[in-house]
Length: 374
Image 1 (cartoon, rainbow, N blue to C red):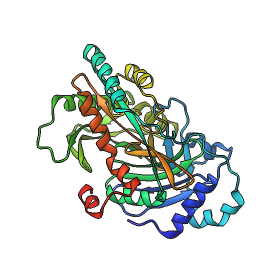
Image 2: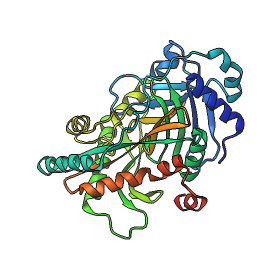
Image 3: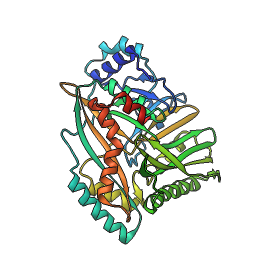
Image 4: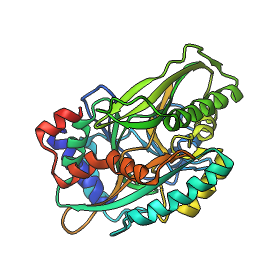
């Protein structure tokens, strides 16, 4: 998969002048889709769910645990050619509201201490809490080169590089579908439980329980929405580089349009896979325990057309910003904590989830490694 030179120049100009843009690649595809839009005070551009344009199509990105009736969007308005033609007339546009935290790192001993405290509570109360960590990496590599390398490494994920003034600059390759909605059908998945790909061990009770919590929550959300759920539900394994997850695809019949789509997605997000369960206990624990803001990590990203919506949980991602020499990145990762968790193992799991992105940013992934991860 290659990003052509014209698109590269358009991305550079968008970043230079703070012009909203999205570069996306669908799972199993190798053709990047680029578009951009000019910010406007009209809701047609700002809040995709409130758009008065029935033909609105473009990219969406939402914050973690966002309970507002708002999702940032980039309308598919300008091609790479269009950006290059008008870029010089758009100097002085507003900077992003959010940028990466400089030099912020989650320290291992603090993370393990917090996880041990959460494990003790879960032993009393049950349930699950997902805790995340953050690391900061600087690189002189061009961000389009980073995106291209990362996208090539994980061809079966939803891959994106995007900027909005509300959310800042983000990069990700996520394997987890939040929901694909078209006509009267919905596809979603439960993705939870983690093990090294090469491991020959059976899935332990901790991972099975963690996964079943997510399955149960999604089925409950669908039932409350009045969906007719396909009873053919089977669990398999989904590989992501050197790790694998338990994955249960779920399909249902449900007619959703306009605001109904937004309400369903925000009811579903965050699932217990990225938030925890029960939500009313897990989310406050996350906000108290984590020393960084998740922003869009654990939220959702995707594409909307008049007839369909596809949203993916924003995982394996980083927030970025241009610096004097190259870019700085906040890389996010996390894991589900249950009463059966071991704090040191949770740290190792969180580190392993973003090792490929970390190494690509630093330019350390060889062709042989890339082939092995695919």
